[in-house]
Length: 461
Image (cartoon, rainbow, N blue to C red; front, side, top):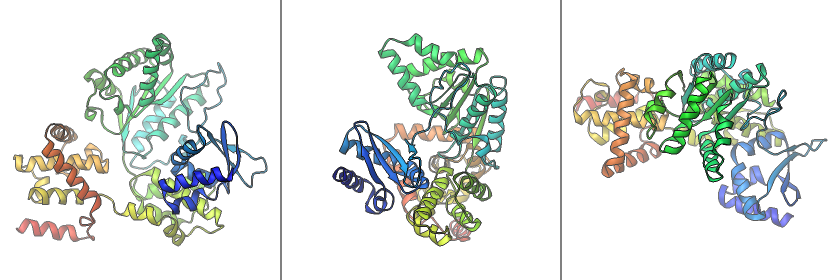
């Protein structure tokens, strides 16, 4: 067994590097290898959570490559009961009719564990209203925002509350990709009636990442009829996406219109106060003793993604528990050094605007001006597109950054830019080059105050 485990570690080292493997994987101890599973012992539960957050996919692939198709089970070495953790969310127990939920709900993703801030207050209020009266208002509820900002949490919380109020409610929570795969499977096995009955008699259909329906005409056709069937019978529909419905390319117009029938709510990156509160809530849930100054330090350096924020806390908590060390700012700097360095080198609106201005020989003031000449309009539209793609900024937010423009103007600018990228290889090459410059160069990350000086210099030229 030890030789097989060393082979897994060797494979993982090639994928993750020796530092990550030595810190997070090598402390695991193989307990048993059966015909169906590999059983590993971890120093503590925090360690397991950290591996699940960051390295589970790589670990599974390496185990599969060395040992074959095997499940991974974890246990905590200090657990008297030898409790096993399969590292996957489980479905809620279902009283009443006993019919299982299609998909899985994350147990900790409830409204009680959701931190409300200015960035998500509207979406949170809409989700709670839907949970209290599903199908009566805000149908569909369409939630959009960048990766790791809390869309999945809100959908899970809504489903949990609906089940709490009505244990017999029939709920399906799945990704658009899973919906596509289910449809393909039904078509291959000639079981479309079974597929229709499964999805058209639900009390709640929650579909994540609906932008992945783009370009799939057969799937869109089936989802269109499923949507109509549920909506006509006042069954609740919740959809999430990384973008506004009108900005989803390759989507049938009739389906896009239905996405806009109900309420559209966006989620933005949280402000620093909300980030600190999120860390505090996560620390309480996981039993991590997190001093305020450490929370403030993490919140200052990780400012765009809640998932990364919580992941950094889990890594820090696991390391502190394993080494029996107190959590301090110095420890956070040591444990999260590489991660914080990458996070600090983030893309900014200023960086995008300056890169665009340098490339097209215009002034920053031109991007916010009312000028509509091609010399200014094309760079402005491209800058809006890059703010959307690289910063996941909302359409209203981008409009404010570019002279107080209406969100519909921003949507049009991004659509025009996407179309030109697709049709013009030379323009696409320019965009690719600008993205590399913006993401990799520290040239655009100026000290406070330097932007005004640079802007003044450009305007006097």
